[in-house]
Length: 115
Image (tube, rainbow, N blue to C red; front, side, top):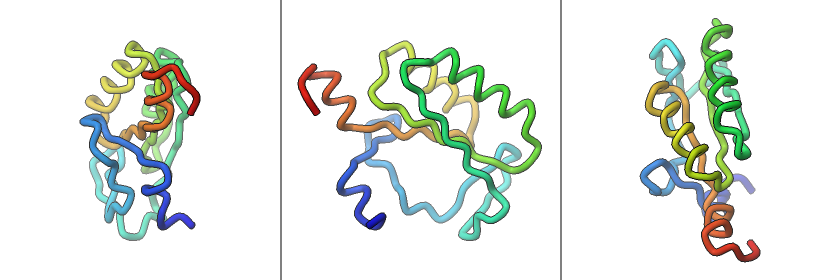
């Protein structure tokens, strides 16, 4: 079931290119590479639902208080430009922060029609 998730739910990176969900390694906050065994890496998922400043504060608190190796995945479901800009700045600042942009929500927001 998870093998075809990219086909069923297309996700985009910041350049609006399809996100590669078949990654072979990940980078933690210290710049160390992990993979293909991810046992020593924690993935923290944050849902950013039109809360750019809260998301930024949450990310910075995680960086300040989490000594264990981690990566952060931010899910953006078609936020406003302000929130998108805040998330993009976090993505630029932190190399182990990844953003998943949901295409269906963005299209619905652009067309103002049903999903």
